[in-house]
Amino acid sequence: MSLSARGLLALMAAAALLAVGAALLTQHLGGMLPCAWCVLQRLIFLAIAAAAGLGLLLPGPLGRRVGAGLALLLAGLGVATALWQHFVAAASASCNMTLADRVMGATGLDSRFPEVFAAYASCADAKVDLVGVPYEFWSLALFALLGTAAWRVLRRPG
Image (cartoon, rainbow, N blue to C red; front, side, top):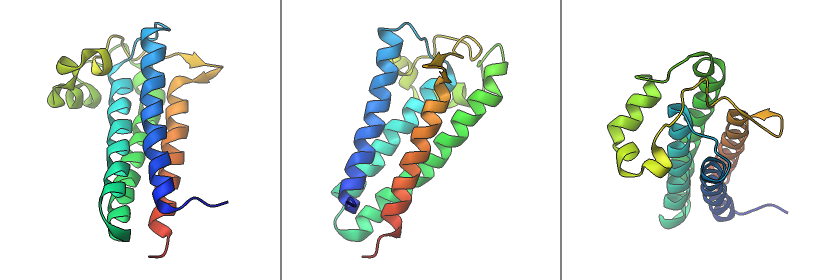
């Protein structure tokens, strides 16, 4: 059974929101404090959810493609962010003044919504495994799946 473009967009939005919810649960109930790259990935997941929602709200196939195209670009950024966190940032003692730190500071979200967007750990301290897999690889996998779903919406005729 194949999902419609609208079904894929709705599933993308839900999955992205669930990812942020899972991150918040592991932070607030599991004590896994996020670094700047972690919270930047949260922002990207929320942006993907918004892009998918936009694709659902805009009329017709063009609207769905606009939302899916934005989501695909954001998923690519998410993949790059997760890879950078794992291979570069996690080896660093500090995330201070990295690109992720500057982006989050520029948005002001870290001070307006600190329970979601404030970084409380260094990149090295935030390096943890979840069920034996590095936390950022869970994000990487979901970004890849969201990108694949967005690509499928873009490839649909009409």
